[in-house]
Image 1 (tube, rainbow, N blue to C red):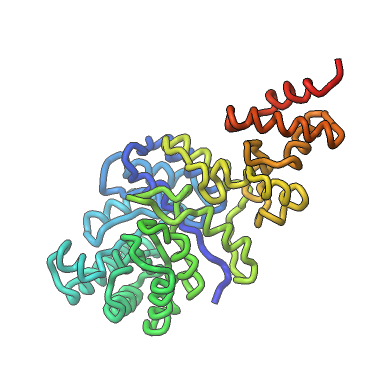
Image 2 (spheres, rainbow, N blue to C red):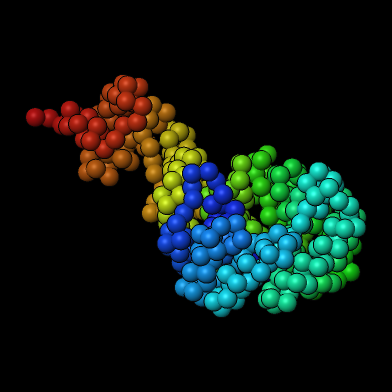
Length: 384
């Protein structure tokens, strides 16, 4: 089995469904070019049948982005598939992503049909899409809550019909990591033609487990992971690209790799945040403002002695300039001494102890002490 994990980015499709974050075609092209620079393998550019704007976006992205596969979403409906194929006409490498519900909840309450008819529709849609493009991905919607035996039958059927990729989405973010990993394992062990397709995973974050579930799925053999920048997406969002990529990067023992140039992660995060008007939470893993910031005195002391004490990755590896020592009332003498020296001030221990007492008084009032405050403080200790 390959050790390369394909990165399928759906920021411009699933991510863009967030209320208030819609992009124009021109803005989507800017983001798509950045995703190409980042090194993703697949860009899901939109859902062409949903609106003229989405159709145009897929068309225009297909014209200017040449390296990644350009993917268009559709339901298992002929009109959807036709629209996807038409929108992909300029793509160097195009993929149609079609599918249907796989859980009994969806089968009964969304489609009002039976398992047998779902398989018939799935086979028909896959074959029809295959007549339009060579690369067809099939999604088994709500696979996280689907019956395992039926799910395996559905996966085997669509691979037999020509699907090159089969997506096993935890659409509602329901699964626990061990449960989701076992679901992927079961598919590999019970689908006879599994070797003819790539298994993909698409996890939502309703319980905050999207990244954990994705890693569990990859560990059981999935070799495509569907992600968004900053984890944006429906409801609580999708699996974060930056979290999966850096988890695999940090844990070399897994023996897995991606084609992502990690130094472009932070700039891409900032671009998407700005263009989609979605601020990144301060404590967001990898790309949050505080991801490489240290304010606790114990942590600051350990970090200054050796960064490995509290950082498992270099900030430069993800495109962040440097770690940050934030001076607050929780900071210790070591951090104060370090920042003063960076500002050009050096004091003996008794003077530093006196300055530290005054620093704490300032910090209790201001909450965060900046360099200008420190310069003012230092000057009070310099003889006139």
